Amino acid sequence: MPTSAEIVICGAGIAGISAAYHLAVTHNLKRVLLIDERDPMSLTSDKSTEAYRNWWPGPDNAMVALMNRSIDLLEEIAHETNNAIHLNRRGYLYATSDAGRIPAFIKAAELAAQQGAGPMRLNDYGDAADGADVLTDTALIREHFPYLTERTAAAIHTRRCGWFSSTELGTYLLEKARAAGVELIRSQVTGVEQSGGRINGVRLGSGDVIPTGVFVDAAGPFLADVARYLGIDLPIFSERHTKVAFRDHLNVVPRDAPLAIWTDPQTLEWSDDEREFLAEDPETRWMTETLPGGVHLRPEGGEGSNILLMLWAYDAHPVPVVVPPQFDPSFPDVVLRGLATMIPGLRAYIGNAPKPMIDGGYYTKTKENRPLIGPLPVEGAYVIGALSGYGIMAAPAAGELLAAHVAGDSLPSYAPAFLLSRYADPTYQKLLELWDDTGQL
Image: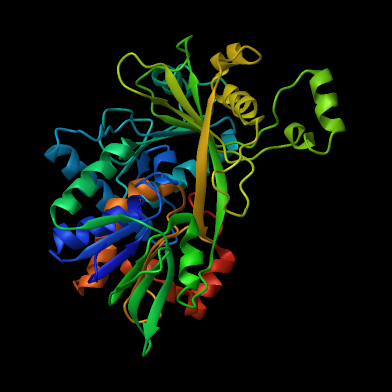
């Protein structure tokens, strides 16, 4: 057990690991201590869909800029490691059956281009590496994505998007950080000591106190609990999100498919008897009602794999954090039926599906779904968190930004957008009242 540390980070998820990496490797800071009561990356970071994108709504370009920087860093790591992180650029495919939404699709792509996500191309499908292809020509959609329902009226294929191995990324960053002197200890942070309005120590479950002048709250779903040790209430909440790993032994979805998202709200198909049965019970009636858009899937695994990851946040709402999380047993059937609306070939599995593997974790987030990265109102205290469902993709740049704050280095233009102090700005409070699209899938 170290007797003291220059910097203590609470939480060895991907955010804490990335922060430790940038503090020790990028800034060459010494005596960085990473503390977690669990194994690294084992609470929520390893429950990710492992996808990334630079496709984000406004009202400004802060999220696009953060993600572009994070993708730059991911690509550097992929190059350095001979792509040990299995980074691809398959893209995201947003699809709709509502022709009335075509103007909104085009506008979204135009705004994304203005914010730095890359150019918009209308019905000019090629092999571009960035930007977005907006397809309103149904013949083009059928040519390139024949597995989509024939009712598909429009699609957007965003290009600087894809997925990678979160485990390999975390392993790489942690190994590099430890080689640069970061120490990892298995313990629970139970308090943070202050004197004269600044940090001077961290208490552990063992009763030990580690003197330090810098404390970083990177506690993931427990971010708010740890912040209360400092007397700070963070404006965050957590949602439980579930994913299903499903064996597509009929090869309905091509293995080179992008991450596909059905953007339309929908009512699931049931037989008359099934619908009547579900509607009778208040606990299941919701399955017969209109569910939100956003059901999505992607292929998972290397050569020879037939696994699909399936997700749908139809029940997203604030919940208490319980470890391990409990999942709705009806989720696999509901998400399969929802995806069959987009990909009719999946109907072959309804009532005859392989045994699914259910997993998931918590999206800890702010109201507008932007992270908290930077100093807290106690001298020497910092936060990196509220990374919602994009923690894996944002981690490289989020850790870099947190380390720049701690080290007193120059900050990127997007840094103010992620400060806790933004909520003290009356103009920002008014903006929050009108915030409609948070970019959450």
